[in-house]
Image (cartoon, rainbow over all chains, first blue to last red; front, top):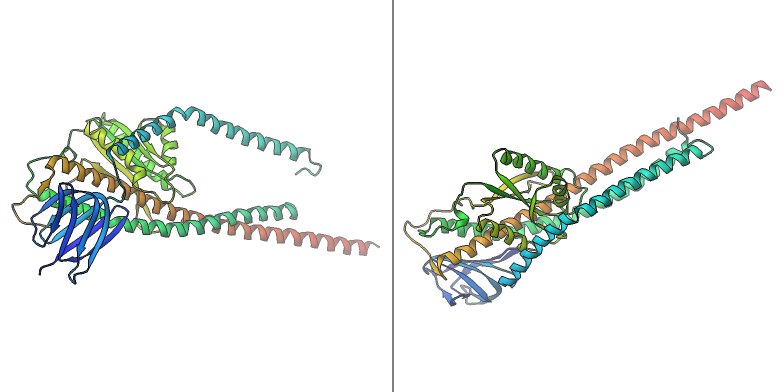
Length: 140
Length: 286
């Protein structure tokens, strides 16, 4: 058996699964070609194309925005990132999440007041309805 | 007995409410199907990264990453997954109740607790309850993506890395089936040992680049996929809980309508009988 099993998956969905003669992937330290019985390897991927050479010779191409490549002698797993991600982008997102928390807590008083105002409004409306019922000639 | 007219207005208003709940039920049903598909689509990644971690755990690793090392717990962070919108039965309350119970236990042991909140409902609940909130993510929409959560996850993993918290637990709804959702806590960090199939005895990966850097990357991705999975599962739970809640609301409205209808018929009949007897009485008197 000169085939190797390939799984390509992304967080949001499954991309490809099947047998291959050879797999080419854009690893971080340079492109790698993976034949069956490759030594176990774990590496990061650069954004680029993963090429899968199927047993019948046809070639499939998949774009990955980075991710993880795991190689076992008979198994290749590509954990792809669908999105292009930069370190700074993560940092900025983290800051935004923190700020959101602070704003939510700072704004707590205002929103509490809104809730109270709404409560009062409902009560006032109920009172008004009651008064109108009392005033109506038929008593309901 | 109240007048026939009032009963008729009441029936009308209940019917209007029923129309709304029925529409919501239909909407939730179709959204649930999509949410379930998304949940199924996210599963392969979670499985594969788990398998990779399983392999890693068996490799002869001299280096131990902080994410896998158990520490004495002095401060704990709870990631709470909730829905953005209400009208979905006891779904969110179950999560909050589970969390509050656990938080009480930790506090009794002298452990401080931080919160990380996903979803509007969690934000408004924990604002009332108080507590230190590290990060929030709300308004995720019907099609949440991993990117929307990355910031929040980074806050959590950074806090863990810097030793600000010693454990991270995620509480979310586990989707058992359409009728059943279970609020279940799950430990995110430190990562609990993942079992995998037995491989060769003595082997290790070739790491490119060096192991620490690479492990950091893999484990970060693992935590991300876990949180994403939790959120997406919670979303499927939300839709199915809403569907069930709206279905029972529509059924209840139907019951109210039929009992009101009965009341209305009785009132009308009483009126007719009264008029008849008055006519007959009047005729007899003449």
